[in-house]
Amino acid sequence: MARSVDASGLLPFYSDMFYRTMHSTIALGGPNITGGFLQPKFKQRENAFDVVTDLAGAGPSWAANIAEGLFKVVSGDYGNGTADLLRMLPLSNMWFIKGEVSELAQALRG
Picture: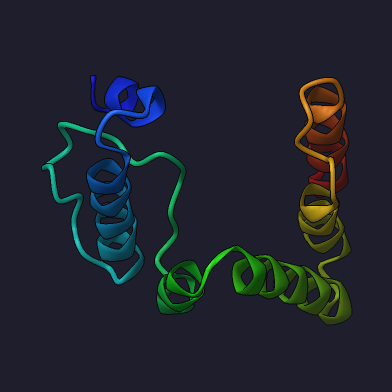
């Protein structure tokens, strides 16, 4: 029900703030603020840097994800790094190519 309100355009500010708070809490190592009643929009790992880039906006968040992928490649984790970079490419989430990109990323991860 909460996702329906979020996607419908009703109360988008409050819905966005709620989900940002939920993701920030999980990223900082805290529990799900709903006690598991509502699930996050996406899988959030425990990482304080994600909170900073999320609050900074889409540009810094995208740049941080690209830097993380490049770091993985340079560190020798070629499969995961390349898969992360592939998913961050422009147009990689378009409906007509998203499935192929996901399959290729999964194959790169092994």
